[in-house]
Image (cartoon, rainbow over all chains, first blue to last red):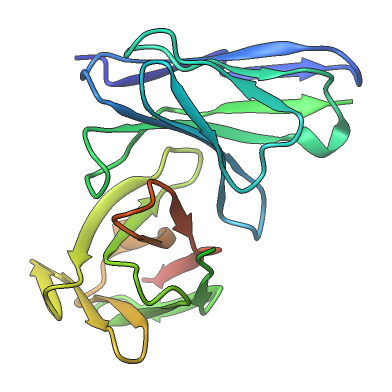
Length: 112
Length: 112
């Protein structure tokens, strides 16, 4: 199993551009989440999904959209990138609520 | 919503000594408390977790204690080794809520 994969590893955007961060898992996990990690602020939940077709907002959802059309994939869309969205983004999946979360390798995003 | 505070933010320990990291949470309904280790440039990985029906859990040199009355839990690392140097995150979750709330992290440095 590849586990949780994310693409790209690194991306530079200009303010106002849009892009999609890809996340996929091959463990048949129902739960998937997106976090952003900023220095001194830990991991903050952006959006999450408890199964295909179901998504909900986390702590910092503004400026981001998600969809979950399949169990395997959970893409994160930046609608109009802003410098405040410069961060490291981690996708995670778990088989259930209070179960181990498996993180992807992360995407480092720089918005100029 | 849940609020998780983590202390200290940095911790330096002589190799062989013990390290203790403490977290407090605000939601008395939280009942799942994982700890993650993140090495530089890597993804967070679960090292130990505890559920609210137990007060302590141990795995070799790592232990976690939970005080539900005081709403705090702690990570204990004994006989520290250089490879224990990393950032450690605590987190809390309520079974009725799929969201996992993270602390802001502790950078642990083991001094040889």
